[in-house]
Length: 494
Image (tube, helix red, strand yellow):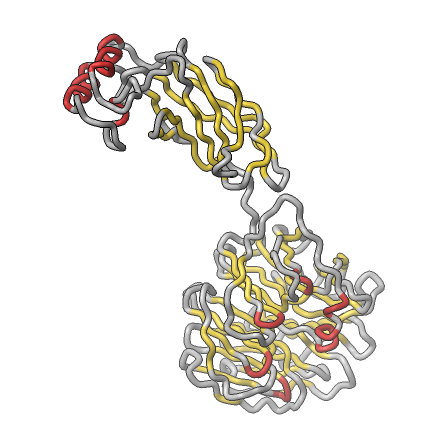
C-alpha cells in the first residue's frame, strides 16, 4: 500500500491547477482535525474503527472511531514515514526513509525498529496474512513471511527509479508499481510471495511518468495511479496481468488508491482531487473534496461508505456516505394554520387537515435539504392556490397558500414544480393531504369520538396537545368548534 508521492512531485505541487469542481454538488468529504501540520503519507482504516496514519517527521496518528478523531502516537523517530499496513487493532507496520521499518504489536504504544537490509527510502508495504512485500527507491523490494517481524531483500541498489505502490493480493501473488531508470511506468509481479519478480514497463499514452499506487482485483485485472512529467496524472488499467496497459489522462497527478469493493473504488491526488469508480476502474468520476490541498492516500472500511483521505500539511478528510453529494430533496411538509402545524408525511398514510378554511387559506410549508433560489409553481388537485414563495425567514423552505373550501372529505395532491436550489438543481415534488373538517383524532372519518374529544377540552386555550380540536382556529376550544364537528359527523375521506 502506497501512500507517499515522489519528493519531486511534492516540490512541484504549487504548479498544479486546482482540480475541476463539479457544479451542483456539495462536498460529502468533511475535514477532520489531525493535530499536526506534517504531511500525512499513508492511512489505513479497519472495520473495527481503529485506524492509523503515518507521515513526515515520524508522525503516526491513531483513531478509534473510524476517523472522526485522531490522537498522536510516539514513533521514536523523526524520519519521514511513507507506507503503512495495519493487520488488526494491535499490530501494524510502517516504512520510511533510510530503510526504516517500524512495527507495533501493542496498538501503537511502542514502535520497534526492524532491520530492513537496505538504506534507501522505503515507500510502500502490503500484506496478505503473514506474507508481505515492501517497495522502495533504487527499485528495492523486500519480503516478509512473519507479519513484518523480519525482512529479506529480493533486490536493491538499481540506478534510479523505485516502487511507490505495493499490494499483496494473496499470500503468494503480489504487485509493486513505480518507475524504472528511464522514467517509464514499471510494475512487478511475484507469484511466490516476493522472492522472485517479473517486470513490465510501459508509457502512459506515450508519456513518461511514475506509478504511485497499485490495486489488482484478480491475477489479470488491475489499475495503477500515476504522476506524469507534464504535471498531469493518469490511471492505467491492465486485463492481462500487467503485460499491457491502457491509460486515461487526468488534469492532476494521482496518488493513493482504495477499492473496498470491486464496484466501489477511489483514487486521490494533488489539488484535492478525488475520483470514484463503480466498474473496477474502467471509468472514474470526480467527487467534490471541498479543498485544494494535495491528497496522498485514501482508505475505506469494507462497507465502502466510511473512508478517510490524508495529505499535505496534516490534511484529513472523512466521509460516511462514500463521498457522494446529497441530491436536492424535499425533507418534510406541513399544513400550517395559526401557530400550529399538521405534519404531512412524505410516505405512508397522509396527514389530515381538520380545520376550517373559510376565507383564510392554509399555508403549506415545504422544507428542503438545500437553500432554495426559486420556489417553483404550486398546483393542487382540488381547490385553488395563490402561488408559492421562499420563506423569508428560512431559505430552505417554500410557503404555498391553498384554499380548499369546496374539497372537504377529499384527498388532495399538492405539487411544487420547478423548485430550484442554490446549485441549479431543479425538483418537482408532490405531497398528499386529507382534508376532513372536524376529524380531530385523524382517523379518516368524523364521529362521536371527535366530538367527545373536543367537549372534554372545552374552555381550554389551544396548545400543542389540543390544537386539532380548535377547528375554528380562534385560539380556544369553544362552542364554535363543536358546531362544525357535529355538522360533519358521518363524513369520511374518499
